[in-house]
Structure formats: C-alpha cells, structure tokens
Image (cartoon, rainbow, N blue to C red; front, side):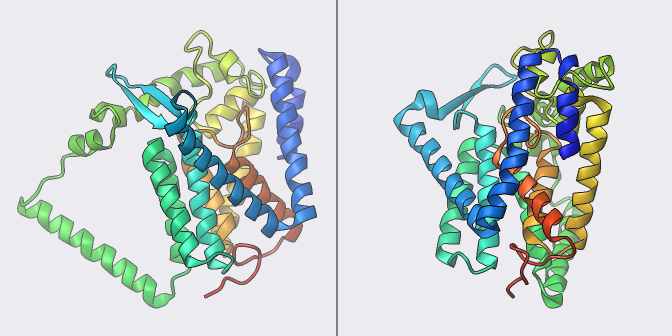
Length: 338
C-alpha cells in the first residue's frame, strides 16, 4: 500500500485536477502514517475500542439528526422511476458501512469476552436498525457474507455437519416444491421486492451501475497507464454526470484514478489478504477482508477521497500482518475463546 501511495504522488502532474490529487494523496499518506503509529502507541485492543465507540457515537448522532434536524440527518435519493426515498444519514451508504463495521466489532469483541452478551445484542440491534434506515443493501450483503464465514469457522465438527445437513434438507425441500408445482420461483417478483423503486430492472441493472461501468472503462482507456489522478473521479467524469463521485467498484475506481500500475498494486494486496484470510484463523482479518471485497464489487470503500471506517480497519489489519507475521488466531492475535 505504501507503493500505492508513492504512485499516487507520482501521478499528480498528470491529474486532471492537480489540487484535488494533491489533497487526496495527502489524506492517503496521513492515514498510512497515522494508523500504524496509533496502533503501536495504544495497542490493537484500545484502538479497536476507540473505533467501536466512534462508530456508535456516529450512528447515534445520525439518528438524532434524522429526527431533530432533517436537513442534516436525512438523505433523499431519486429513483429511476422519478420517485424519491428518504434514507437515514447525510451519506446513507457510508452509514451502512459503519453499521457493517459495528456488527463485526461487536461480534468479535464478544468472541474474545471483551464485551458482554447483552451489549453485543444491543449493538447488533442498533446496526440492524441502521441497515433498515440507511437502506444499504450492499452493506447488508457484505455483513452477512463476512459474519457467516467467521461464525462457520467457530463451529466444531458436529456444528458444521448440522449446518450443512440443514442446508441440504432445505435445498431438497425447495427443489421438491418447485418440481411438484406447489410453488413457482418468480425472479422478477423477488427482484422487485428487493428494489427500492419496486421494479426488477433496478436490480438487473445494479441500480444504474450497469450504465456507469461501460463509461468508466472508456475513460480508463483514455488514460490507461497513469489514470486521471488519485481522488479525481468527479473531475474525470464531468462529461457524463457531474454528480458521479466514484466508479461504483473498488478496482475500476482505482484504475480510473491511478491507471494499470495502481490497479496491479491493489489487486496484489487483495489477493494476498484473501489468501491470508482463508489460511489463518484470524477473525478480524477474515471479517474485514470479506466485507471490503464483497462491498467493493459495487462501492469503493478503501481508496476514496475521504477514508472510511473500513479503510482504517483494512490498514489496521495490514499493520497487524506486517508486524506480527505468521499465523494468528482470534480477534487480537490470541487464541480464539471456545
């Protein structure tokens, strides 16, 4: 990631908005310096506690503003059919990502017996309520995938057999119902139920992302080597949509801003972390990596103009890997409590 930071600085002279590239590159380097230093000074446990506290304060503040000062606490999103929906938070998508981080930290702190069961359920309830209010399907999917993998790793052999047995039984029952004609699987109806606009086309076109990605690819082709400057997605897409803040995909966003070189660096980091997550029994590593990878399919959460809570957690995980090395178990590099 340090290499990525160096490349971000090196591409500043070629940026379509030099001032923006300088500012965002400076922010990136600030985070790269800040996270390792604060972890070294305070330790992983205290840093994660502070992050957990900060997330709770942020979410509660957003809910307070939602009711007390609607102009600040509510976001209005226009749907393709011309209707609009109201979501909690000035940036509802980022609020959903904070809720995803809250689920992971609450669950993992409970694993290490650093949090009581009652408080874990209180925090999980707050996160679920926030998911509903923010209407962030991306955050929900990432949370479900990451939490499921982490929980499965904690099951003993009997629990795994029971889980897969239940899944197989449910699958057989579904196939029987479909085959007998008792029920039918209507994909359009399911997609319409999941869509905010109530139409299946919204889901099939990834809420407009299917229109954005071809344009982003064309812009990447216009400057494939160095990109358009770190954090310069808005300036690079003025002729398409001035309100477009990013490419709605982590890899495409990096390719647009930093070209092929930056993309290869990020892909190498993703592959290395995914391999580590699959081979080490480290709950924090597994959760953060899976959430960022799943969410990153439709939303950039790491290399954006302003770092998010997932950016901080991702760099923190990198720091733990670099400093400790080897195999770790448990949330804090200690044996997982059974």
